[in-house]
Length: 269
Image 1 (tube, rainbow, N blue to C red):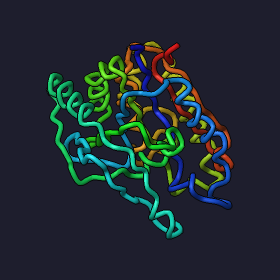
Image 2: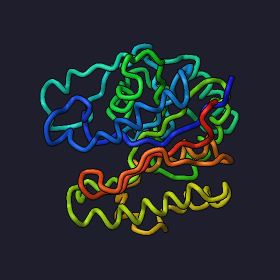
Image 3: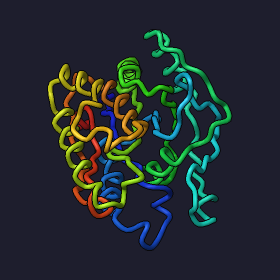
Image 4: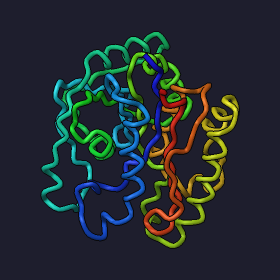
């Protein structure tokens, strides 16, 4: 079985794939990039999803056999609170995550009640619209320490050789107060340029820079709070010694913002 890459992807804003009108405008390139991912990877055994929208005191696994839905967005049309993404979970994947994290000395808890949040079900509905690939969601750890999440990625790296796809879902720029402001453009471009340069550096330099990401140009302007960046650490840690490739980029997302998605490791041939 070929080793699968890992990914850091944007999940966009709210339930955009189900929206029409102005809110849905501007998602064509992101949608195209997400739809292309199955061509790159084939059909994985299951997906390990790390979403920006789930934090717990310790790393936590979603363990419901048929996870429900967690509509963690506000002010959208009533029908967007009826969306379903009925992908089953993967007990086998959850077991391997516990095993690998345990070997690395990383505690992992279970949550049998948690449902898919929009950082998970929105991009998955574009990538695998038939919801036939099992999904296990893994939380972020409170405190959002980049080294802790890189370490979790390193621990989970063997999953990639076992047919499991690791997806970090966030956004390379996430300053909601400035998102539609003309002042959002320059800091998003400065941070995106740093991110591109960092991820294409040597493995040692890449990891060191990611640990100290707050030193990047416009870091806190791009991420006043870093929960949308931290899923990147898990994806990068899972392929720490392998090259990164930018697989999606826009300089004018929502009119002015630079955003990017990245793949770590080569796509299977």
